[in-house]
Length: 127
Image 1 (cartoon, one colour):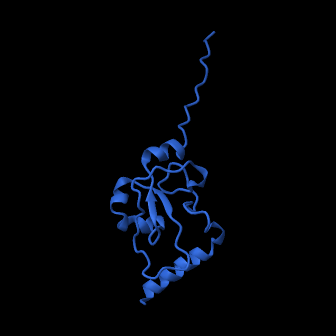
Image 2: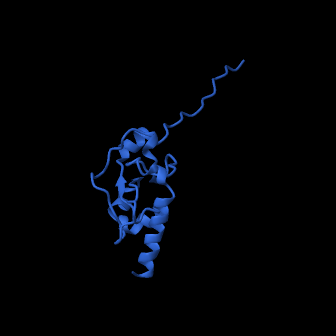
Image 3: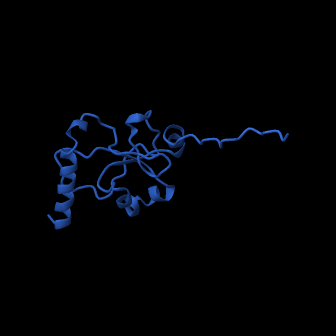
């Protein structure tokens, strides 16, 4: 096993060991989403997502599976990042995990905050 493979295996094993309580919660992404910012979405607070594709995308999947399979990750990213995920997964910390991409429409309906209308001051008549 190469040093890089051993390091990835160790990282994935530690990640799996650090969240044992979530193992039964299949389909829930671990992470904090910040509305309006591309990245990982914690879907536990939202209705089931509409996915771009039914199968997850894997980049650098481990050759040796850790004892617990990594939890799937749900991401909202620009279309170019989806298309060339192998070039962008490290930026999002999602290489080596099964990634499901959510549709823009679902994201904007359920995750992104509603725009706040500008505050208008009442017109005061000149006296």
